[in-house]
Image (tube, rainbow, N blue to C red; front, side, top):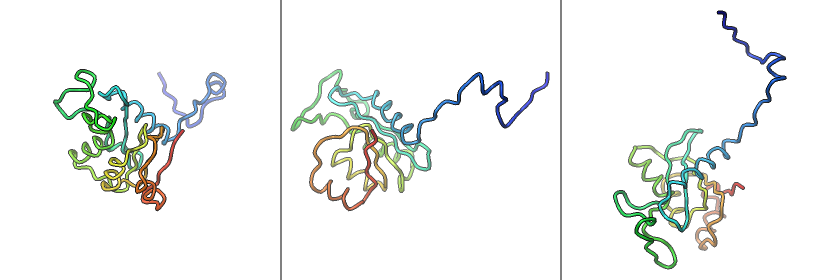
Length: 160
């Protein structure tokens, strides 16, 4: 049996199939953040994120309880000012995962299915992440958060 390698499809092959449209890198990583959110252990909001540099995944995270502790789904949420404080936010979990694995986040990009809150935004900046992409808005941002965005401390963009 002879194996023939070609660099271009034959005319018969092009008639049989169409070339699929590939999603952009931004869409690819955002879809992975949405998938990570399915691991969330809090029924109030499912958040996931992916941290990337040079098109390679460094870390992922989702909002969930501390390791070995009870989950909101089984034991209920701990609410303070209408926010669940039982869980660690997805962005912080991803940053922690990178730290545990000794991975630098300088110059990295984070993709979140929900816009980071103020505390996560501070962690993201402190970790050296320079670009933030999010899908759904978190709501009103504190003044200082808005100032950081306006001063271009990070690239900050919503992906529809």
